[in-house]
Image: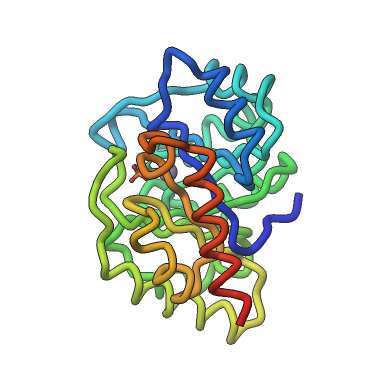
Length: 226
Ligand code: DX5
Ligand code: ZN
């Protein structure tokens, strides 16, 4: 699977859980590039969301690649389970992986793309020795655990720094921004160097989720037209 630049990944966390099939259908019929799925364990983050059975069922109806964000401790125990459930991208947290290199290889061995996520306080410089092994870096622009939080603007600086590291070394890793992303800040985030925008509330809680996805996508086209 090729991850496009300027991709939009709606986050199912903000969807109506009583109507997941309809929500997945909306995503299928939209310009979304990926579907972002937030798995929380109540240990790595102070919240519990959903897990394997939900992802397995979403995979039956969703035609977009599944971007699974594991906010769990000991993610290495469940990599193949998430892959078998349908994950196309599996992202683990830097802060949850003492043997990150091994975990990243483990993800790749399943055939999924491998991502690493950083909490807001974790510097991008810590990725120096793993950057060439990952397909995606997810920079958290809120403290993970909940949807609907305010974007932390310091993230813009982290995006630029990470982009320089990737360009200088001619690497292929994509930069994904997760948390508080919406129409009000998408342009700045893309201009700083982001490739993938995760958007939960700004899509699913909006009047027309399909339109919101199209509008986010259009901002990407505008930024990169010049
Ligand atoms: C937060 C999650 C995000 C969340 C984003 O821990 O990782 O993916 O769904 O939600 P919004 O876009 O509402 O901030
Ligand atoms: Zn997420």
